[in-house]
Length: 345
Image (cartoon, rainbow, N blue to C red; front, side, top):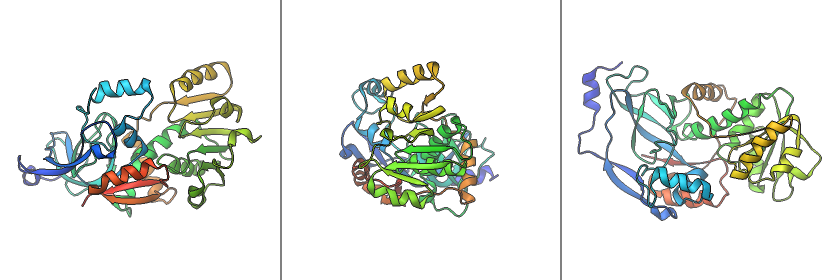
């Protein structure tokens, strides 16, 4: 543990500024503005992280534009700001970086530690040079970065990795079972197929034509091009269907499950949630949904798998923070293969 004198030397002056991408309104990527704002100072139970890399996800783009179903849009406005963002003004929920300062009560980390983290929806804030996070976050996860991984490689792990681990654990996958991941080539899907393979499943990945070679490279046993074939109309059945994108026919997905199978929906609509509850109560098939409450313990599980080479990140493109608008525009095309990373130098 560093001395308090060392800590105080690392604290920036009250007037020091940092670069951050500020979310000024709901709308297109142009509402993201690179500004200089006050550098945060950690509280006693917090660490300050010099962010080296973060990501742009489809979820970030949906939040920025408020391109959400009506029943989600209203709660989002109520929480963030009805007419414009107020409570949250900096997007981004995952990062990799270096601890720059620690509060007096911090015991698990010290200045200089390389870490990766998920902030959780309640705070966000990773589109910036610095962020302060509690040592033991209630909503999010913080751990030492995997060894032999760059900041750019580590930053995409917390959100997609924790979501994938959360859902697949609920299905209690057994060796030899058949698992299908719909939307396998994105933020959550690339981790889901690798974790399912690690659990011993025979994995089928569904995505667009340009992502199929990548899926084969990370261990998918079979690939389906959804632009050419609808997996729900074949006679094939699965022990687990993990629908990351939530756009397939609910009834057809349930029919494609084996008896006592699991249908996992990462992004359900209101109707799907109602039907999920009914199906789980009236049949021997389980339909599960809900956001992951990722913990530091779960992040350490992923760290171990990364360090042993069982899973890895897939990076499509990297952009400097100053080109965040271009990164958002690319993600919105739907052509993203794996992850898009923002680097902060």
